[in-house]
Structures are given as C-alpha cells and as structure tokens.
Length: 419
Ligand code: UD1
Image (cartoon, rainbow, N blue to C red; front, side, top):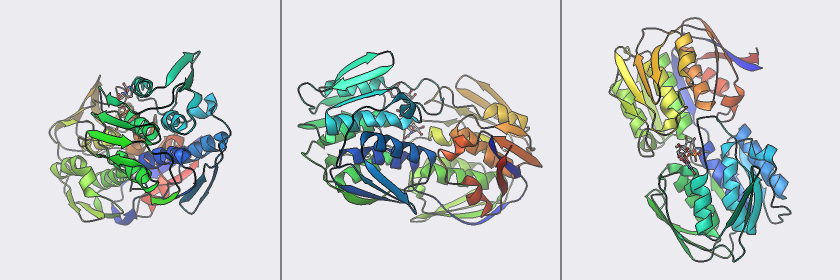
C-alpha cells in the first residue's frame, strides 16, 4: 500500500499554486461527449478521477490525450452507448455520463456510480429529472437502461434538494434537448457556473448559472472550443487549513477568496490572518488557534462539506470547545477516529462533532478513509509532533495532484513511500 510518511512540526512558508478544479473538470469532461468537434481543456488536473473519465470516454469511442495539464478530447465518432460496471464504479461523477450520453445519443446503458463512501449517495433526483425530459428508464439487476422513444425534450424541473450532480446532469442533457429546460432550486456551486461557461463556449444556450434558477434552451449541435478550468477551491481550502495547523505564512496563487468566504471566516475567527486579492489568498498564523462558533455545512454559498474534515482538523488544535454539524453527507466524519489516534479530543455523534481543542497533536499510524479525510489527516500530521504514517493515500490521489510535492515545496516534511 502507498502511504505518506510525515514528520510534523515545521511551519509552512512560501508560495503555492492551486491546480484546476476536479469537481469542475469532471462534468466538463463528461460534457465533451455532447460536442461534435475537438475540445481543449487547459489546467486540467492530473488526477485518477480524470483518468477514469478518459477511460469512460474511450470506451464510448472518443479520443483523448492528456499532456502538460492540457486534455484534448474529440468525440466526433461515438461507437457505443454502454458503460461497463467496472468503469461506472471508479467514481461518483460517472453518473454524469447519464445526461451526457442521453443528450448526445438518445440512449445509454450503465450502472450505479461508485466514489467515496460518504453515506447513501442516491441518484433518484437525476433519474426523475431525466424522466421528465422524456427518458424511459428501465432498471434491472443494477443495470440502468435509458432510451428516448419520442426524443429528448426540455422540461420544468424542481429539485427537492439543490444537488450538484443532478443540476449538472440536467444541464448536460438539456443542452441538446428540444426546447427549454428550467431547473428550479438548482445548485449554485461555482463548479456549476464553470460547466455553464464551458457549454456556452461550445455554443449552448444557458443562463442563470450561479443562481437557483438555471434556464437552458436546447441547440442542434455543440462545437469544439478551448476552455480553462477554474481553480480548485477545495485544494485552496486544504492549503489554508494546512497553514492554519502548521503555522507560518503562505501565499496561495490561482485562488479565489470570494468562493471560500465561509472557510476564510472560520479561519479568521480561529485566529488566522487571511487576505484575499484578485486571484490569490495570503494566510498567516502566528498566534495559537482558538475555538469558534458552530460550523454547519450547507449547499453553496454555505460552508462546503468538502472542507469540513479539514476545518475539524484545524479546530482539534483550537483552545476551547467547537461544534461541527455535517448537513450534507451522513458519513463524512471518517477522519475523526484517526484524528483521535493523533491525540485530538473529538466526540462524534450522528451528524455532530464536538471538538475540545488540544495544544498539540502527535504522530501516529492512521488511514485515509476517503479523499477529504485523507487531506485532513495530512494537514494535521504536518502540525503534529513526531512522525505520522498515513495509509490508503490512493484516495488523496483522486483529488490532489501530488499533494506531498505541493506541501513539501512550502516546507512540509512529507514523503510518498510503500508502507
Ligand atoms: C458533489 C461533489 C462533492 C461535494 C458535493 C456537495 C463532485 C464530483 N462532487 O457531489 O465533492 O461534496 O457535491 O457539495 O462534484 N442526493 C440525493 N439524491 C440525488 C442526488 C443527491 O438524495 O439524486 C443527496 C446526496 O445523498 C447528498 C446530497 O444530496 O446527501 C448532496 O449531493 P450532491 O449535491 O448531489 O453531491 P454530488 O454531486 O454527489
């Protein structure tokens, strides 16, 4: 098993660049399936989930090439509408091929997506929205067969929860559907806006992204384009939390403070100095950390669930008692028992974690149970006394481009090895 060996205790110092966003790149790559031409995606992060997407495209007959952070995709000739179970299970975002395949081909056969186990992650909202758009869904033995006997058409869809994936799936399918689609209570995450900008660059007619009503007028065809993926706000949050834990100062470039307001506010309340500029964020942590009021995860623009394990790690070293409420995924406290092994005092019950800050954490043998739990443990280990051995880092590789290299470049002592 691959792992990180981390020697904690050195403050971070220097400049670090945030990579392109995973959660923006994955729907954009799925969106390439709608395009009758060549797409060039700049700042595409080199991640295992991106390579899984490329494998799905290639199984459908598309051609792609990744070189120096640029992914080129051509889906002119599609030879297949069936995605095998082993590819669907590679990640949660494989669900987006539902909307993309249906939009382009009018049919598809696939199974349920995989991904980090953050609790039940159903796709009922995706499926019922597509049914409203004329898709017939036949589900048997875990295989989902979709067809559009009367063609794909626009519809007015009210989401009972502003699901990110469901909003993206509907946007993908609606881009080439007949007529107008309106999504009410759509997700407002910046990655939704990035997908809309990409689809528009390919000729789609979309408005309202970033608000809770998105309107899409279907067009006949989408054409190729060149597009640069937005910066990854959760990677930025990871660097901010690592600096808050380890102390020192960091300038994070290719980072947008406006998309991370709730995280920055909590860090400032905990005693960090954080300043946002146009495309960079400066953080300095010179004083000991202190506890904050309750942190509640919410859909955007609320506190992001993806940053919750990271902030929990920060608060484990903040003097006083803090409370974190996880409102999006029921199983997102998987870093907590491992943080406890490192000396943190955290009581977790259901969706609530009560954290009594301790002055220092110490190195231990711990395991990443999912992507952000792994990132949180890495950040905690950088600030801990002694050596941490962190296993299961393949989870971390799903969402970070060589996290150990990035953090080493600003002073962390972290090494990838076989453990
Ligand atoms: C996306 C992000 C993930 C982030 C999450 C919430 C990607 C690749 N992943 O995941 O990093 O943590 O948004 O910001 O972009 N739900 C249903 N039925 C559905 C769909 C969702 O009940 O059909 C529920 C889920 O179980 C969950 C909640 O809605 O409790 C949020 O899910 P959703 O917003 O869809 O998240 P994802 O798109 O899976």
